[in-house]
Image (cartoon, rainbow, N blue to C red; front, side, top):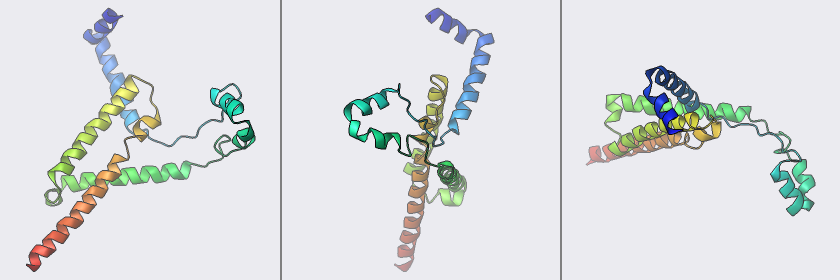
Length: 169
């Protein structure tokens, strides 16, 4: 097995195809963070068997629940989710790329943001190339972008407040 993998990764013929596949899958996974609709659990699923065995008095409520019958409409949630993520990312990139505002942000937040971007791309690569692409993989870490934008907003407010105090002295 090791010889096959070593051969595939050392032969330029295979390496080009593997690299193109990895880049395409990583790019796709990077933007795949939707909240997904779950399918109802059928009789043969272990969770349904466990509910039937250990919680028989709750089985009827479980079977008729919105969660088990796709009763939740999540397209609006997905649209809101994407808007928050994309606007936060646009805000952070804009602030960091404009020299005047970049100087007002601490080095720690800038380093944190760039490290997060590296982690996000690395996560997308590992999850999509070594596993199957799934929205929950990126969905776990994507919320760091709005956190960074909130930290920047707080830091800009503090910068303005400190400047105002210095001007009054």
